[in-house]
Image (cartoon, rainbow, N blue to C red; front, side, top):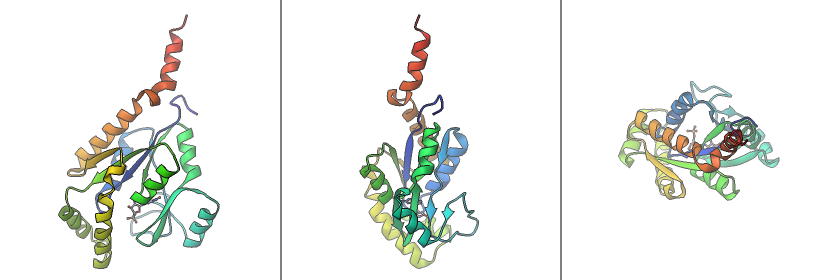
Length: 207
Ligand code: 5GP
């Protein structure tokens, strides 16, 4: 473990199209010691996505084999594809003193909670259903059928906001990044997070 002590585990969830990945990527660029977890998925890479950067892209068979040996901290079926967070990758980062952010869906966040794993969970809300629909159409990555499916799922997902510790509205990207940064800084300053470091400081005052 580094002098920073063990890192904190953050979860960020939001309906598809809310812009959560962009928000988290901006934040990670701004904050040393904060790492975005790279999930495993059975979905094929989209244009512009790189293996090992956006996701670890693997076959459904390999994913199922990883489930069988309990390699995932959590995993879920989202829109017919499998997505999961590696338990060992996450543990390695936390043990090295990095804070880790999981960008995962509502089902995944529930599984982390059910397993009793300590975490700070943030829900990113789109400003309204209309804005979300416009964003999904604007990014033109999806077919009409996929857009309708994502919108239907988003109705269920926004209803889960009360399961989270913090909620932020992504009305403007810069403001949303600032709010998320504020949450990370505040969580790093709690007595619990600071105790190991502060005890070291207090010892320097001992005669
Ligand atoms: P996309 O295919 O658009 O990249 O992601 C679809 C959904 O899967 C998003 O809501 C994203 O947050 C979620 N997701 C990505 N990685 C994981 C993961 O490791 N676990 C879970 N539960 N959801 C994930």
